[in-house]
Image 1 (cartoon, rainbow, N blue to C red):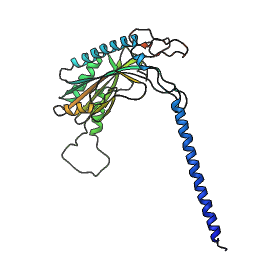
Image 2: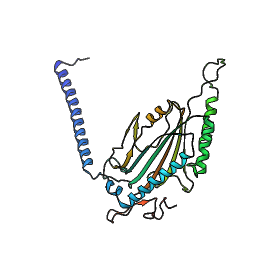
Image 3: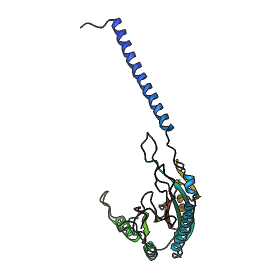
Image 4: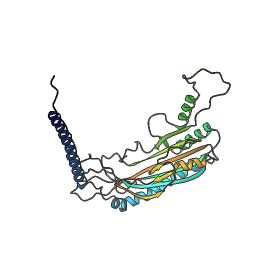
Amino acid sequence: MERPTGGRQRAEAVARGCGITALVAAGLVCLLVLIALWQLHRAWDRKPPDIDAFAHAAATRTADAAAARTSSAQLAELTSALPWAAPLGTSVADSCRTENESALFGAARWAPVNCVRSTVVYVAFDGDLRTRVHQLDATLAARRWVGATSLENSLTAMTARIGQTAGAPSPAGPQQRSTEAPTPPPLCVSAGYRPSSQNYGMAHGGLGVRLRVAVAERPCTPEADTGDIQVGGTTEKYTVDGTVYLTWHPLATLTVSRSAHVMHRYVAAFSLVDSYAVQSTTPRTAPPAPPTTRYGVPPCLTGSHACH
């Protein structure tokens, strides 16, 4: 077989170099095109609507004040019926926000502005867990809070199920005889509720109220719907476009829980979330419509899921 000469080898090397150069150039061109498309995307009208104007509209502020009074009264009514619960503190996050529902490129399509007030009351307690959980369920039922779903998700039922699971023998591992009972894992349960007068669950971005009750045994941290960002023991506001905070009195759930667990075995969090105002959707050419609220000003739109 004839071996390639030096000249032929140089030609092949030059060809390979040209190919690599062409690939690099094509990559650079693609990168420039992507950068140009991104700049075009950013130049499009993707700014959110005027959240601040909606949040400070008269009807929204009226509904906000009513939500604040109602949330405080409902939570105070619950906790006052639990004399064995030691109060730890209350957090509040009240914000109006929207979400970009469009694709990555093109003009933005923003969801109707939704204002939500999240209030969390933390308490600590000791004593027999089954007795305390049963008292919690009885207090919720007496104040007409019902399960948010059709499933059996009461705190009593969930605690019983977890207790049965924790006490079941493990099929894995060596079979060793022991006179000591296995140590159950710490209990951490959470259940959702809604007012019995509200015959629907609170849809995402819609009007309504929901309550989460979470109980956590040392060293667990209870679940809480705080309305902000919590990372470890720090709290932050949502900073994405389309969010305006009206009230923010944060508490770090992890910090509250750890401090309470020094003296108490259990911590409970009552998270009451009230979605009290939603921007009415109208064509861009029409004058802005007043917000739809839960508190009577103005009446809800015909066909809205809030008309119950």
